[in-house]
Length: 209
Image (cartoon, rainbow, N blue to C red; front, side):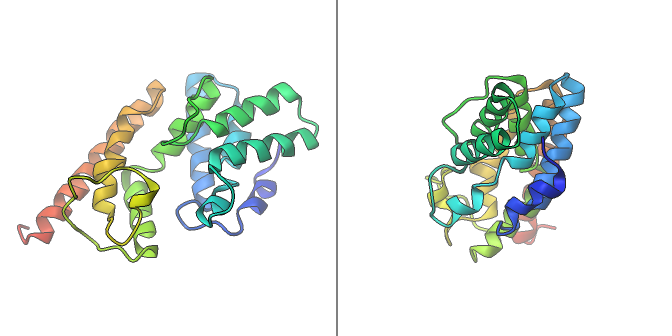
């Protein structure tokens, strides 16, 4: 439907947490899951390559939900390239349903795979690195106790939020949100690494090790 180089042009103003490196990691995971779960690889590839094309607009306060906007843009882009409407719709649904906090639930195997691949890239060593990349951009503290009212919303992404809180309110929940058996296996290992990292960070902050 489109090549990696063609997709790259849609991410020139993305932040480091959602840049084209993120897209390529999601693509690699999505291809792995698609092969293991016997999904339509072409649909999965196109959805992975285009899933965050509206992210920069949302982050800048332009437009609405980036998943919904990306789905609309991706469908139009694919139709303009001569892709059959049913297949363009399948890609658009997967993109619309990829968000952790989204209102659209993935209904197809391909949508579940994109959701899983995108979520797997938010946990494990990559997840820790991304959390701190975003935290640094927002000038957040390295560590803090997690506030009792901390929740996983974009409004929490301010100077008072930390990567530690992000793990507590969101990243620690990802393992239980993925759909496919293959993703569940990967998520279990990545979750364990991340949990140990933040537990060790807490001990080091308090001078225990």
